[in-house]
Image (cartoon, rainbow, N blue to C red; front, side, top):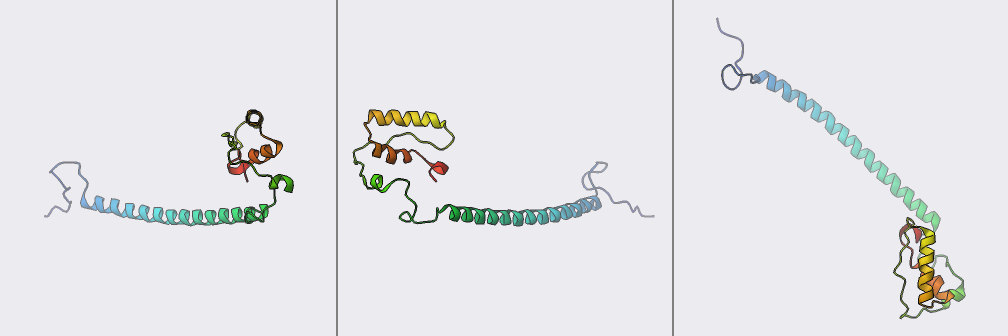
Amino acid sequence: MQNTRQKPLGSEGSDAPTLQQLMATMRALQVTNEALRKTNEELRKTNKDLRKTLYQRDRCSTRKQGLNLSLRDRPKPFSQAIMDELVSPHYITPKIVFTGVEDPENHLTTFNAHMIVSEGTNVIQCKMFMSTFTGITLQ
């Protein structure tokens, strides 16, 4: 009578898995891999849809705020008299920046101190103050 039990791979008497066990493990891994691939594809599609929605929302918001206008067509922040005044090219622009995170009162105090020291006129103060803004505060 022949022995029907398969011998394990490797040395005799070791706890090595049988070929059938390895094949079963491989099939289970293939099923898991396929499920993960499908989940990954769904997540990729959802991510693409979310990015598209955010992009469209940003474009709509930008249009509502008038930020897609050319520089010439944008509303002017100052009166025409201030816009017409020229600032000397030798005037030193303040090196302070306001991103919206800093303390606004501290920013104003620092800006005013710079204007006093550099003898900035009201026109220069108006024009230079905007140059201290960056990022969302500038928009």
